Amino acid sequence: MKSILPLFFAASSASAQICFERDPALPVVGGSGTRIALGDFDADGDLDLATTTWDHQTFNSTLRTRLNLGDGSWSGETSYTIPLTIDHLGFVDVDGDGADDLLVAAYDLYLRRSLGASGFGPAVTLLAGPVGDVVAADLDNDGDLDLAVSRGGEVVILHNQGSGTFIAVPGPQGDAVSIAVGDFDGDGYGDLAVVDIYLHELRITLNDGAGGFPGTPALYGLSMTPRFVLARDLNGDGLCDVAVGHSAGRINVLIRTPGGFAPGIEYPLGHQVFAMTAADLDDDGDVDLAAIAYGDLSILLNAGAGSFAVSVLDAGDSAGRLARGDLDADGDEDLALLGISGAVPWRNCARSGTPTCFGDGSASACPCGNASPVGADAGCLHSLGTAGTLRAGGATSLAADSLVLRGALMPNAPALYFQGTSAIDSGLGSVFGDGLRCAGGSVTRLGIATNSGGTSRFPDAGQQAVSLAGGVAVPGERHYQVWYRNAASFCTPAGFNLTNALRVVWRP
Image (cartoon, rainbow, N blue to C red; front, side, top):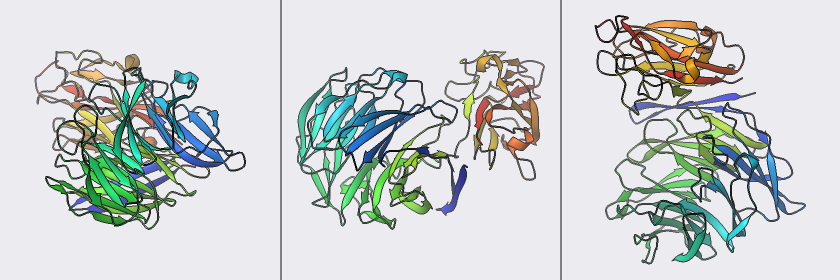
């Protein structure tokens, strides 16, 4: 049974909201879960899943992969035995073929190239161990992804030669339990941030412009034992900041200034930090943080200026690992947690559904040359010179439907929200009035709203939930659109237009 986990709190003077749908666990067997990663290794546009387990009796690890089927479900698993414990698991397209390849650190660093839906090729050793953390970035700005690898008391740079073969060169010296890449001096090249678990310090080493790091690092002392480091612009000033996760159960946020870093702000989480990531979790345009701290999922929503509001959710099952990415192609960042019972997708409800059938020329042509700008993801232009949009947020669960359809950029006039069971002309739509009708099949009128300030929503106060109004009784796909009045003489005599469509997959 899926549970809906809403979290509400005030940040600064504005109201911030975040909501997750927690899917049933994808089980892992034969040992304890140790690593989790997301990547598109069959090149179909969806993020697939990989997990590893450690068997304490055989001393072997098992790598398990599942394909994302694009409708909220997953394929059966494919497994590979690896005769060592795994210290790093990640996906990166090393050869530029559009399919993510697999990087595994099991003492040595191995590459397994993607074979698409068939799985992965044999393991190729990239670097002898002992290997710890691995991060992928284009360090020499040649268009392919290089690797920065912590090995013993040094960082090794693996320069990609363009086809997924690498040349190893020395990087910064010193222990690095975790590595992050960010442009700390504004020259357009990725610099290195590492944290040292023994010296309790953050080191920043600048890129020389050719993917080398010969300079003396800038050192910043940390008050606790660091385990993870992330590099992102956390306060929106264009400078790269740093967040450090500590064994002592704290996240330390260091804001970059022209002269270095401001004194760090500590956020206590209560337990040791096992994993952390950065993403815009509430869809407000700034970077939030998420961390696993001994079974709890801590969400740090950015309240502006690099300060954060912390809420803690029970992740259950002694969750210890974390990955993030858009699992359902709806435009927001989801999470995947790994615990004892398996991998658990947590779907973000900040956005729901996938916008489709745009009036920008990518679908059928608008009737009067009234195409909307490419990238607007809207319908056809109306008489006010803009094009109506349809977006949604909330949970698309039939057991706990909180979906809200939101129309915007329309004239202040009546608007009909309606549902279809299929997409017209395979999603291209057909000319209807001044726009394109895209939601077809069996059509259901959901309700009429009157736009104010160009916007409206369904359901509003007192109206049925979307799934009830649309008669959606079993999981499946539906298509939504807004048909609105545009009485001004503009395009055709019809006097109406439509937003883009929205594809929603309803789940149990």
